[in-house]
Length: 363
Image (cartoon, rainbow, N blue to C red; front, side, top):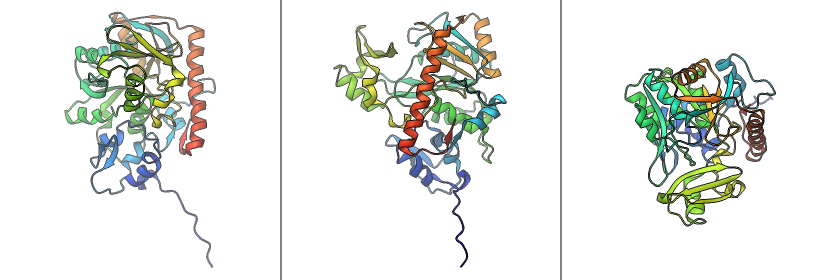
């Protein structure tokens, strides 16, 4: 009797939406980045998750670009930076790190307002002809927008603390005919767009038009309904419309109402409101972006900026030269704190990935 042939796992080009649903959506490790919805015409956003609306020809596109199916950071780093990280590079590969602050900070801007300043400079200098940003409505629901002016970028400034499928708006930008698209978003969204840019596979739908990725620091994000119903309304007795801003500072999650009063809880008390799809993520500092921006490691009102690629370094230098930002050296203590949080997130990923049996994601 002939021996049974060993079963071989299908490659991503042989996988369809069924595999994506089985391995990512059903086990609730989908990060709702919007990538599959943006680039596959047969997938739409329904009931707060990706859904197949037409016949699936098993083309593999959705499975290939999802940041939760397989993510070989070493391969992506080698293609993007020409090398892989060293053991001591907890924040990923970067050329330079500084603390920076926009010289004309907008009232809506979070921390140093640097991400806003970078996008404005990129638009005004012609590096990009549009930017995909995440805005919000008056009840703090996230809304992805394609913007083309400094005023539009500034109007969308400020951190949003709930999940958004912002990559979907890249499709809108392409359909409108833009050829140099900038994007600002969270680590999972940046991971997805780098896969779109760098994977060696047969799909070509204009990914070369994505020319700038500005990544944000992110420990985790929140489920909108859970955060608003459980914390904002349930604990603080506030209507979302009464919230002026959210912030995380000194181990506290703070909700500032429009009268200026702060309502706060310890950050660990917000675990119940965390979006489940954030579990299998190790990336704190948007390690595959052109330039990363976050508050951790810098003083209040300042941002930590990590310039990673030539494009990111040139954009920051141009923004500094234009007088749109000012900078100072980041302290050793600040860098140590950022690296510690990055390490904590990576360790949390290792623990949760075993619990959730996440496979194919390697750092």
